[in-house]
Amino acid sequence: MREVKAFAPATVANVAAGFDVLGFALDSPGDELTAKFSDQHGVRISRITGDDGRLPLDSRKNTAGVAVHALLNHIGETRGIELLLDKKMPLGSGLGSSAASAVVAVVAVNALLGEPLSKRDLLPFALEGERIACGSAHADNAAPSLLGGFVLIRSYTPLDIVPLPMPEKLHATVVHPHIEIQTKDARGILKQQVSLSNAITQWGNTAGLVAGILMSDYGLISRSLQDVIVEPIRSILIPRFYEMKQAALDAGALGCSISGSGPSLFALSDSMETAHAVARAMTLVLDNIGIGSDAFISKVNQTGAKVLSIA
Image 1: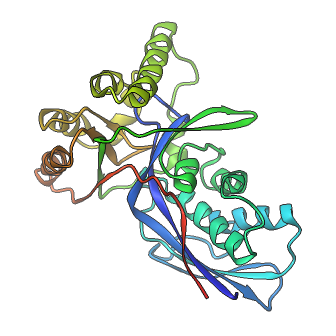
Image 2: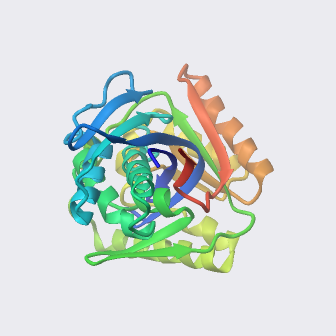
């Protein structure tokens, strides 16, 4: 085996009340990466497409490269590796772009090496890529991108990932306005302290959302998709945020909030028909102020990252 091509999907993190502890995977968009053995020593990124030349080719400064270095160091692999990354999702979108790059890289390289580690065991190495990209190794993008599904990060020390079963009728709509917000900037404006009353409300909503998912209780899911801590602060970075949110609710969405650090918004619905209606309503708000957008609609992706081909 000399070459492996893999895919890792975009994700929605936080999911309203679950800041840094909840996330789910989408069917699209996502990143693709080809990993090859190389006669040159170390890890080399020979090509990146889809980034308009913005991402570093230096593997020590690139999310995908850092993740692969961590993986190779862990298993003691010394053969040279060449990476070719195809960015098929927007940067600074709130859809876990950096996580997808880190995840797809470790999945491809692990397969190239004959899969010495299980898929789940690759997560810590992907998080090292997230650390260099975002300043912190949060797992609410990387875990669902890698494993698929809807996940709860119960603990970071030690890392404890809990997959949640998906209600059959749950569909996601994601609208990405054609503007960009850097994760580091979006984290930088957050308050370091919150009131006890807001904390209690947030805990209740987070627990309610998890319970609603476990019980397939769409009413409980709807009531719990409320964020009283992060959304009020980050929403000021997104043009017409509350108009888009209200448009989603008026079109039948169970709830709507910011995807990750924004500017993308997500909405959950109980049918594909409603999910499409929600997308039309949200994008119309942006159309009316001259901001382009992309809409992505799917059930929650249960597969996560996957190998596309082996040669």
